[in-house]
Length: 146
Image 1 (cartoon, rainbow, N blue to C red):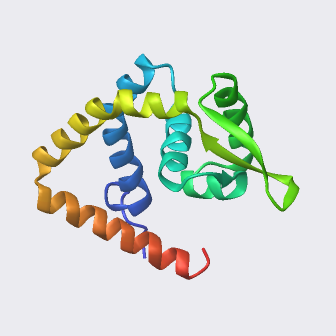
Image 2: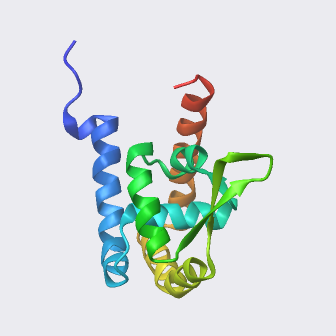
């Protein structure tokens, strides 16, 4: 049996969809001199609270070697801070600083406008359905240890 065309290939479709969506966000991020990966780190830490680097890498979908560089750059810009884990001084936890939170808040109106435009184009119901389907895919694959 032949593999599906790239047009109907799930990995390719997800990549193309990601590029289409991110094309809306990249100008906003570029105006603030922040990369997509740095933005993901900020958003995950703001949502989850302080995390160890391994968990942050997992939740932000960033490879650990890349995260090391990202952390350094974000610490230099004072967007995140590094602290020791209370019961184990060898481990560190990363957290959003006031400057990082201020950046998130500054970008919130534009970010909401981008999301609203996407939802308006495809409809709230379709938008929620797509997110639900993707969440089910992620959870089903995660539960199988992949």
